Amino acid sequence: MSTPLIVELKSVGKSFKSADGTPRTVLDNVDFRLKEREIVALLGQSGSGKSTLLRIMAGLIGADRGDVLYRGQPLYGPARGISMVFQSFALFPWLTVEQNIEIGLEARGIEKEERSRRAEKVIDLIGLSGFEGALPRELSGGMRQRVGIARALVVDPDVLLMDEAFSALDVLTGERLRDDILELWEEQQISTKAILVVSHNIQEAILMADRVLIFASDPGRVKFEMRIDLPRPRDPDSAEVRALVDEIYAVMTAGRVRSGKATEEVEPMRLDDRLPEADIGLMEGLLERLMEDPFFGRADLPQLGEETELTDEELLPAAEALALLDFAVLAGGDMALTDTGKQYVAAEYSDRQALFGKQLLARVPLAAHIHHSLSQEPSGQLKEEPFLALLRESLDQEEAERVLNVAIEWGRHGEVYSYNYNTGMIHLPEADTESAD
Image 1: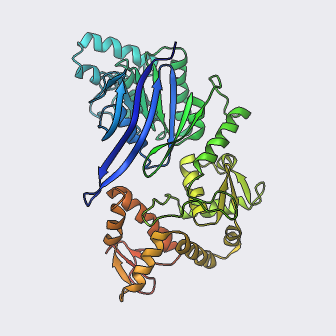
Image 2: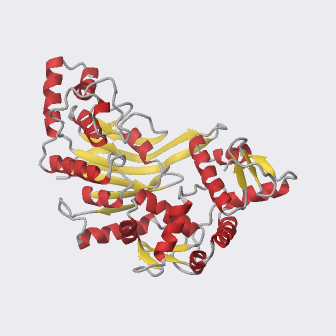
Image 3: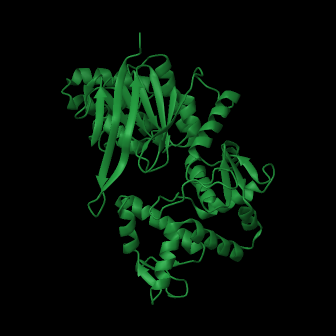
């Protein structure tokens, strides 16, 4: 007898309108099945559409294309059997813990006595006893997230959707809360029959999930699936878990950047492609650490993350940026310095800036376009708006601003152009002496 399906997505697509009215595809041809008694983790870069997918599954927004089925029936709005936990806690600050937990039951017309009984049960389960009358401002971040989870569980959902539910917490608090949820799941103390977790944390996904899906970007779609048959609880230091972490790192860092073969390039960047949001100081720190003992130019990414105490959300964009600029090569979950990267580490500060600028213009079409446009302008300066408009043809306003900000920061560091925060003007370094630095 096959395991019953709870949620099924067939060729689901979703588009949003850009600022100029043109459609921008966020999700394309997504097929997904969530069965009873399984936990699925969804990994992918920021902006890949993971949160949009969760909201479609919850019935909070509709799909433009394809079919969304809950228990075999089309989903046209919020499903009573699906609850969602948000990263931002999303509590009502004027309500007590118990009132926040009961609010979903109240919206369903459940009587006060039954609401109190069910709230009391879940408060005890999730470790909130004694805090029933507290307001959110009186709670720690971990306790506030417990309230959010309790509010989702009190309606006895079939499916629990968790959108970066632990990422706003410190490491120890997040691990403790994750372990508590897994314990409730394994002991079947909650009625939830399936869990879908969106995460940036690769190890977290492997420790929790029966299946891990990796999302590609532009548009969002499933590009890789890994089944994990290890029994829970799983030891993060075991050879089996570490091997799976390595494999996921290898998949997450494959794609547009260099594949690790000296003669091979994979899909050159387009002018309007997303840029990884990587801090320049962090990128430099990684290059310098790669040259030191025990790496001496090459590192296993999970080990590098442990050595530097960087989260996956910090490490992966920085690694992608270094590969994009040809300071490093990513291959098989490892990062190795290129000759250019070694030259950068050995250089003095001013020489580093010049080399960074050279690589930026050679490897990032958006930066090259900005620099060329400024060079063609007699004044050597232009408003940022034309470049934003160009990016908005394929990205939404927020993402277009983020990408341009990254390009500006990288360009300022490489001294290929500057930016005046007071006027919103981008200019060649010699074209304008006024600066907001």
